[in-house]
Amino acid sequence: MKIRQLEAFRALILRQTVTRAADMLHVSQPAVTRLINDLEADIGFSLFDRINGRLNPTPEAMVLFEEVERSFAGIDRIAQTAEQIKSLRRGSLHVAGAPALALEFLPTTMTGFMREHPGISTTLLIHASSIVVDMVVGRRCDVGFIAHPLTHAGVNVETLHRAPMRCILPHGHRLANRDVIHPEDLRDESFVSYPKEFDGRMYIDRIFAERQIDRVMSAESQLSAAICVLVQHGAGVAIIDQITARFAAGRVVVKPFEPAILSGFSLVTSNQHPPSQLAKAFVDFTKQRMIEQFAE
Image 1 (cartoon, rainbow, N blue to C red):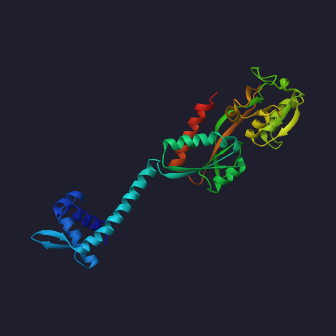
Image 2 (image 1 turned 30 degrees about the vertical axis):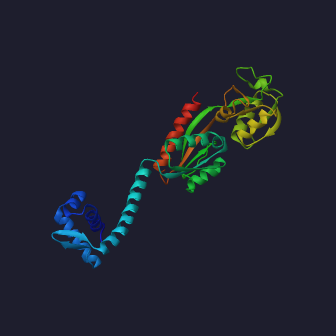
Image 3 (image 1 turned 90 degrees about the horizontal axis):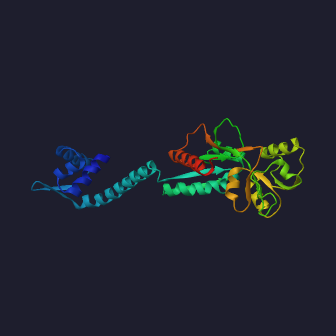
C-alpha cells in the first residue's frame, strides 16, 4: 500500500468521478484507475462497485475512508507544523545568561521576541558565566550570554556590548548633583563592591590604589542587581556595569565615572553544533535590542 494509492482513493471518494479525482491530483484518468486497481490488489478486496460506468464506494471503502481521512489530517498537521517551524512560530528556545543580563535585560528581550514570534516557548536559566559556557558546550541551552570574558575550545565567543561602568549613589547623596564622579570624590566613602575574585573588582581597586585613595569597604556582592539594592538603601556607593545601572536608574542615582573602566557582555554559541534558525533569530533580535537601549 502506497501513499499515492491512498491519495487516489481519497480523491475518488471526495470527487465521486475519476475525471474530477484526476483533476484534483493533477494526473491522468488512467493513472487514477491504475492506482485504485493496485490498491484493491494490495488490500485484497474491492473498494468500488462498477455500475453503469460509475464507481460507487462499497461499505468497506467507507470504513477505510474514515481511517484514511484521519491519517491525512495527521499529515496536514505535520505540514502545518513544518510551516510554523519555518516561519519561527513553533519551537522552543533555551537561553542561559549571567545574572547581570538575565535578571532584567534578557527577560524583557525574550518577551519582545515572543511577541514577534507567537507560538514559541522559551526557557531562561540564570548561572555564573563559567556555568553558562559549560551549558552551551553540553547542549543544555541554545545560546548563552556571559559577563566575564572566558575561553573554551568548544565555543565561539562574540562581544556584544562594551561600555564604561557607572557610579551609583543613593538618592540625597552629597555627590548626586555632580555631572561626573572621579576617584577623588569617593575618598573615605562607604563602598559596595564585587568580591575580590571578580575582574571588575580588580580594575576598580587598581584605580583607587594608584591614586592612594581609601574607601570604606562596607559590603560585597557578586550580583550587580544586589549591589544596586544595597546602594539604594544607603549601604554605600558603587561602580557597576552600564546595563544594570540603566535598569536601576530611578532607584539609585547613576553617574558617569572617570577614568573609564570598561565592562562588557558576550554571546556564547557552540562551535560544534550550529544554532537553530530560531536561536539565530533571537540572537539578531537581542543584538538590535542592545543597540537600541544601550548605544553610547
